[in-house]
Image 1: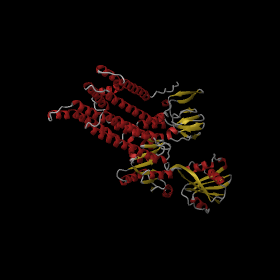
Image 2: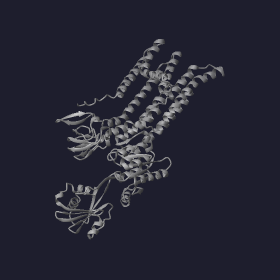
Image 3: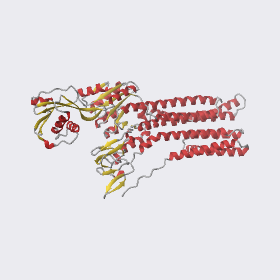
Image 4: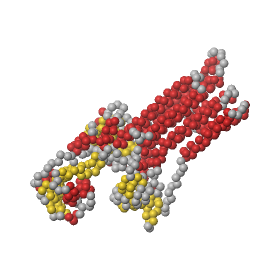
Length: 639
């Protein structure tokens, strides 16, 4: 039975923002109107109470709930006490109610800015959440039926029409099309997909009808894992966030006690020790001003928001950071260790050169592909890809594979040999050695040397640039680890400009080297390991920060990593480090700015120099400035 697509729910944050705007304008309009109406006595109190309740009723309710739940010391309690106190002073001294209402009004304006900023930083996350598919199409009796993706079993053939999201990972069994992967990788250019290609969930089919045989359940698919990573990112707090949380728990009760002492002790000293008038209202006013100034909103709101914005900005660039603690660790990276295959190289063997050949390149590749057509070895597959079409095996007879040497066969009745130098020596054919690094396929046709084909793993187009970008991002050492032979590893290392190369390693050898590097890294610095294979999972876990290639990377590597690059582009590593450093700069700026201004204004408030209007700036003004500064963490395009 078809399941209807899920209805989109209106974002409740937008409703709250609209409601708050109405309240702000209503309270401001009432306050301005009352200013032009001559009022006195009880009517003045009652009428000014209306805009106060319009703008502040929710703060009073939250403060009451906090007291009831024995969680007294928060910003709601501080604002409630300060504004109610200001009202009481205005009543007893026949003063002005405007200050009390203005404090609450500007506080709510600050809250609105904070809500808007959070919504802005959530936008990237929301766009990422749009990759969640609502349904999957299954063909039944010639018609398409929409079902819940959770109900689709592995091996089921699903149909994805133009404009629809791919709901589950699988392999295309019929059709071809163009895929929009921007939500997953940050890459704006579409990717072509055809029959036989693996396809990941979350991308959008732009053209053509695709039939996909699922290879995973929905819960194990790429889209589900990405959403889980992002949804849980905020649960992993950084040291800075933990510090602010602990600071607020100690700071808020301390300033409440300080304000109480400021309201009680000086008047008592004046009255008992000096015999002067206690001036209760003056000192209570100072204490209330002290409370408004002391509200820790700027720190409590802006620091988590800075990290949230940083994670959101990174996700838009195709870099998934699993928590703000990892963002903070990433900012201190000075050693970056790479796996080679699939990380700095594409992990796919390709024909990279044809040398000393007597025949045309295409003809030599044709002979090589035909003689190797019976083999499933990666080298044979790379020759067949270079040939560009399915070899006609009927042209090949008398195939003889010589272990450790190569293959001999008759192609169109002509003896052809393809293999290493040992095969040429075995056949007594003089060959020309190759000075390039890679796998060398020497060719002999009808007993004569016909040249050799160079096959090697292809270095990623951005790999060399990525190493240079890391240096400019403050990384002091780059290291490459590989299980490949020494000559190949050294050649790749030299070409890329890597500082240190270790080759012919087993997975446990990689862990051992990473542990040695961790011991030698500078104090306060961190080591990042970048890998993609299942054998990289132990090293990813052991490093200070693990970075996995998400598009081609294994599930185990992605699970073990702290950061995932969705398009496998090593250039994104330096961008991730720069994003993290920018985010931490903003965090420290906000901490220094907020605490510095607070301390200055607290001292001025205690001395009676600062009144409620300066208190409003110290609280709301500082919060707005800190929040706007935090939003800058979203903008990463120019990094």
